[in-house]
Amino acid sequence: MKGGIAVLDFGGQYSHLICRRIRGLGVYASLFPFDTPLVELEKMGVAAVILSGGPASVYDSSSPHPDEKLLHGSLPVLGICYGYQLIVQANGGEVGRASKREYGKSSLKITERSGLFTGIAQDKISCWMSHSDSALRLPEGMAVLGVSDNSPYAAVRSSDGKLFGVQFHPEVAHTEKGDAILSNFIFNVSGAKRGWDMSGFLSETITDLESRIDGRVLCAVSGGVDSSVASVLLNRAVPEMLQCVFIDTGLLRHGEAAEVSKFLHDDLRVPIEFVDASQQFLSRLKGVADPEEKRKIIGKVFAEVFESYARTHGPFKFLAQGTLYPDVIESGRSSAPASIIKTHHNVGGLPKDLSMAVVEPLKELYKDEVRSLGALLGLPAKVLQRHPFPGPGLAVRIIGEVTDEKLRACRDSNRVVEEVLVEEGIYNKVWQGFAYLGDDRVTGVLGDERKVGYQVTVKLVESIDAMTADWYRATPEVLEKISTRITNEVEGVVSVVYAISSKPPATIEPQ
Ligand code: XMP
Image 1 (cartoon, rainbow, N blue to C red):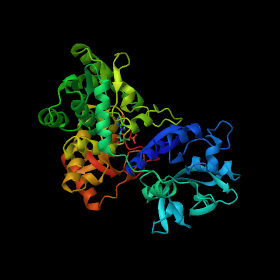
Image 2: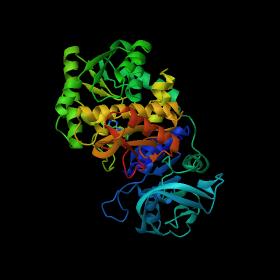
Image 3: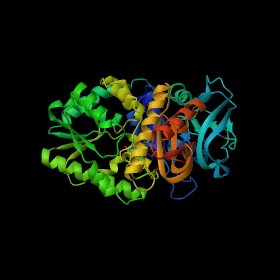
Image 4: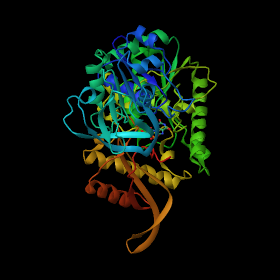
């Protein structure tokens, strides 16, 4: 931690993302509880502290507060959103309800370049906001560095240049120059040391797994980037202990099982067995329309199939999973007081009574970090660049009951979207591209006949880490090609629409 950055977690959705961004800049950063005492941080030798955002209001009596001494500049401190408001309040300013709440994209006008904005040429940058409170009056001596559409104090610094505050989120990908702003704080203001990189993480993780794993490990793989990287990592660390299993839920993408067999089993020599459980999943999903219920059933059947495999092929001492940090936080499993967004990410669906110790070697990482790790481990680029696919599979892309007809239409439409993105050379520009459908039927004309058919929604999103996302500005030609191919090739679909909501407020998957 010496020379690194401590991020104090006030429960914001993006707290861990701040660490991830700073690690991306080559500086070690770690998340700490919001009330970590200053003396402990000083003992660890941290170069600076970042106070995260959070859902509380600083003026509520029950709101989380840090060690008071931190708010007066004994170490360089950057407060983000809620963290910024703590600094304002503690130094004699006033925080209250904003006259206009700001959620999503806003525009920041830089009014002073010193500190956070050094070297940023533009006068205006777009930034990501998510707050309903704001600084109403600044403490004596605090200078304004930037103003936004609705915040006259969107970025500030103390007179001694040790305390900084921003109302926006520099850590999210949709804030322009966010990395430059963080970089200015960690290198220019606090003098942090570079020294963190992915090959260091790889060798440390292998050493850690070698010393910890002293029995057989079972690892469920789905063909997705996360579980593939986890399985190859384990195969590197403890090859003689590893057994992987691929459960076909019947809700997978077109050709998925065959592809996984080719690259993991044939090419990378990972020990893997395939279990076709599609009938079990599909029959249990019959007649179920409620999204939470569907997810619960899938989690339950997955656990049953997995458990039966573990019992018949065991004993296994460890259960390995490719859980990433966003899965942990979005499932409400993080220790921070973050509000829960979704309950369905696959960390919720583990068999509870297997008496296996859980191993999650990627749980500190984000998707882009896992891709870099996978590249170091020799996974093919095609696998690493494959768009994320949710654990519950196409069931979350089918609104209402999962019927054979909808499943086929959904799978075929997803195949078309992927194929067009590859053909058009934009697959890697898009974080995730897919199609979903519900029970909506619209009237179409096929030949001379009027025919009622499904309406498919196509969604292409840009993101860095899935915590926030924006819709991809596809060209009309790409949209036309996708639409024409879906209505021509996918039986029963007569209409295609394009989704243009960002996250937040929408999530990436429709359910
Ligand atoms: P949302 O829809 O929550 O998705 O914005 C964020 C990212 O996570 C993926 N996702 C899932 N991944 N199990 C998973 O492993 C799930 O249940 C799940 N639901 C969503 C989603 O595809 C996106 O990349």
